[in-house]
Image 1 (tube, one colour):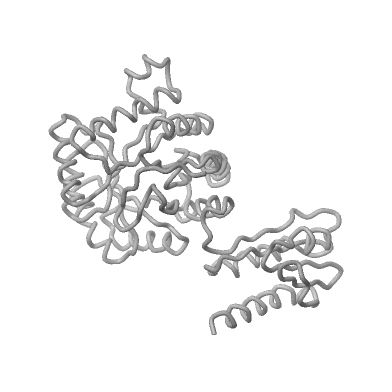
Image 2 (cartoon, rainbow, N blue to C red; image 1 turned 30 degrees about the vertical axis):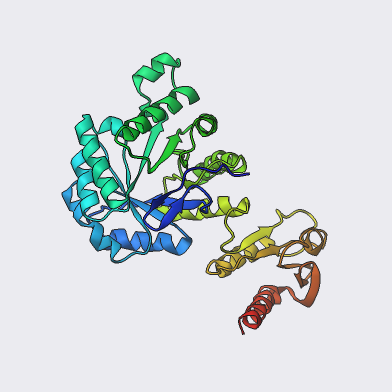
Length: 354
């Protein structure tokens, strides 16, 4: 069962409480380049992103916020490092959320100015601790970087904001070490009911980073921990969104889009399955229907083991079958399998919408 955390908002997107788990990513464009930034966000939107973060490094970046928002449809979070004035600029120009750590902003009067501006505009703040940014005091007290030192560093950041009567907070506790990240999030979930932003920071290139993120965030999500997620890859941010969406879909935490299942192939496979699956993945990429589609390599796996799928195909030796909920509905030549599958699905969709 998912933990019931405090609900906050980033723009119109609810986070925590009973809200769906949202997907975030971050632009790697120069923020002041409005066209490039908006184009990248729109590409992420097409894959299902809910919230996008942009770096605010100077006044020009902040001034680009309203121009970017005119072209996109999701809330924006400003990533602020060190300079409280940049946070104030971002709020002034219409940002929907902030990512900052009070500890690197400086004196309390600076933090208070930012907090008051956020309270006036109804803007939430994400605070977070990475394994490399744990305060020395907690490293000494808890004998180095571990779940305890990370959690207590985060609690100190939260207490600073709470001291100014600010509570619209979400929290991240990231590490590039999967086990440490999981331990920190589990420990913090016992200590606080603030919503959690999950991630494995600096996870690496696409393949390795996907595995780390799926293991780390998947473990936590199965525990009922996590309210919003960001997959961090050294790759196009669009890939981050795709991976995040698949993680949620694999746990039935997001129903939007096709859940494509296929067997790994073996000596029983008598159909050219790999290119068939690749083609199916491309052709289904634009579908938003909540359907489970099975592309199987032999009669053992489909329709038998794939009978829970909404639709599927299997075949061998030049021919194959299309099935619905385990029942065969068509027998065709192998090269006609995919087209027939699509025709049947489209026919059913048209019938449902008529």
